[in-house]
Length: 158
Image (cartoon, rainbow, N blue to C red; front, side, top):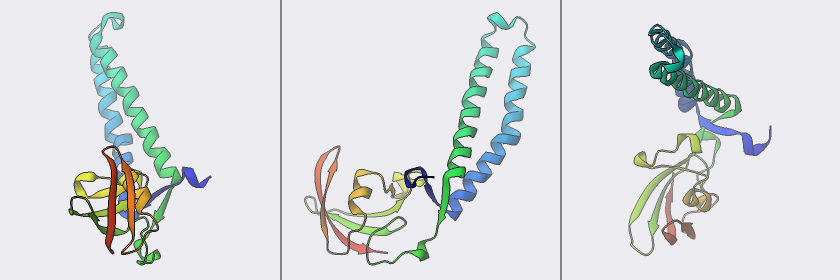
């Protein structure tokens, strides 16, 4: 497996994905099958919009299962204790300052699958995440973001 295909996850996120997959494969599939059976009972399938909708939902549902299986199959568990805190890496918590606005931001760098901007978790593959990797406290860096060029200073790494 090439390095580009590996999905790095924390143990907690890996467990969440496994739990979600199990639920989808058990109770989720039962619910979809019931919807299809109910729609099928309404008669002529060639003009049954409810049946068509249920079958389409089943396809999307199976696609979601397939995607989760793929992510789990390609995942590698990472542990924060494996990394030094002298430079930024995946799972680093960083405090950075926008040098133009003087605003300070706190982020945790995570895999793309764990990114959650509302909880200040940014992907290492995002423009900011990519630019921060390997940097140290006191370093300044310029990020090419959709809003334009933004200069940051690294204030703290945890």
